[in-house]
Amino acid sequence: MTDAYIVGVDMIKFGRFPDKTVPQIGAQAALLALDDCGLTIQDMQALYCGNLGQASGMVGQRLLQEIGQTGMPVVNVANACATGATAFREAWASVKAGLYDCVLAVGVEQMGKGLLGGGGAKVGIPKEGLLGSGTMPAVFAEAGMEHARKYGTTFEQFAKVSVKNHHHSTLNPKAMYQIETPLPEVMNAEMISYPNTKLMCSVNVDGSAAAVICSERKAKELGLMSRAVKVRASVLASDPWQERDLVMPDVNSCTRKAAKEAYEMAGLGPDDVNLVELHDCFATAEILHYENLGLCKDGEAGRLIDEGEVQLGGRIPVNVSGGLLSKGHPLGATGIANIYEVSTHLRGEAGSRQVEGAKIGLTHVIGLGSACAIHVLEKAS
Amino acid sequence: MSDKPLPAVPYLKIPEDGEPYLEGYKCGHCGATFLGERHVCSKCGARDQMSAVTLPNSGKLYSYSIVHRSFPGIAVPYVSAIVDLDDGTAIKGNLINVDPDPASIPFDMPVEVVFDDALGRKDTDGNAYLSYFFQPAASA
Image (tube, rainbow over all chains, first blue to last red; front, side):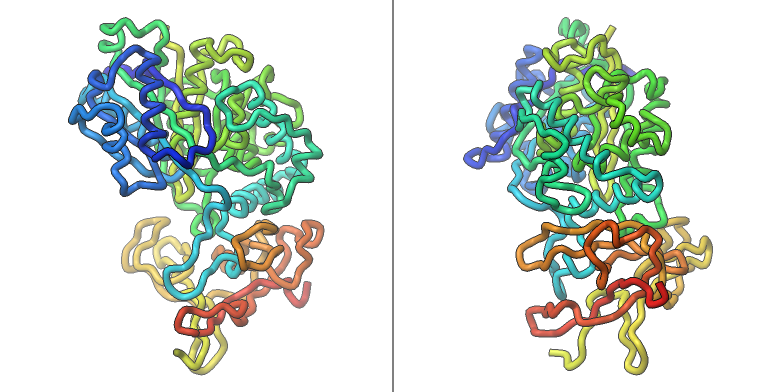
């Protein structure tokens, strides 16, 4: 099988664009990614388009109606918060399989403000606040408290994740926010679902990101290898059975399964990884994933954040983009925005937030329900 | 409109005579238990091995969150809790009759399942509902 390379990748600055349509927002990133490699929509053989909010709305085709209706096959993808990464993976798989040698993956989302999850009932009575909470801040708080019961992880340690990621975003002009949030500010912000305060919840924003993926032969033929990023591993996992997972969505075993397979596919281990963009939808979640991705041993995640190992300049920087907490979390775009961030570091083009000498990077997203996607990327040699 | 309260969830059973109870399904092949009726085990994949069991009314607190922000009309704060029932079945619900303060909510706290009106919630036909809640066990 051929190797697959990212030859063009970009994202728009995340924000709120109520006057634009979803296809218009997605088209912006598609054009940026094409410009990043100097190709046109006519060069693309297929489009894999990730979007959740209009999953039945043929977003990919409507996106092409904005930028070029070539008649190429379009696959619309929805997979909760793993939507963008799943679209990217479908594009990657089509190149690996030899079906195409130059394809486009786009992730896009337009979000409202406010709580996600815990919706109303179609029959009977609403269950929110009657049978616990299905809101995302509460669900991920419960997952964090599971870590607290095992290892004594504290509210303060969870809060430090937000301090770090908000600090990182001050170095990222494409993040929604560029604002420092000291620890007391994070801990004293409005409590949403203990232990997640408002500043420990990801930001609902509109956004899009896109990538052009080529086979090795095509990338060389086009003269695009100098900035190309090799996809060393692409893994998708659903949630294996766990004793509580039907009442407590399990983000851990899904991630552990995907991580194990991704390291095997890439032929390397967590010690070889220079930076990670992981799914910090809530501050509590980031702590869990340090261990799930093997960045430290089980029970050491609190120490990792306390000792600064995961901040820019530390042993294994995590979410130097600002993460979902500060860059923002447009559900369908997030998976490809992560890939943009890691690719930018591997290319040495990340400016003031550059992870020096980065050669290998890992991206991780998880959608509740559950879907976990992990990609291991390497600068083409 | 029903003259008696309806169950808030299908796995809450209200017998004509006797006390309400929670019903699970247990796999005869691997022993996994699930809330509510099913015919295939999602742990081991066995078919036609599931049988109804009455779930115990006691268990221990596994994890929780104190919910301070919810949707309009929902009273806060309240405690959203994951409980391991004594037979190992996991169940989620509101933990009541406890201070909404982490210091008052120790992990593994013994809890009991109690049945009561579903916080006054009614469906569009005006039916009242019976729901379940957790509270600290009387002996605790």
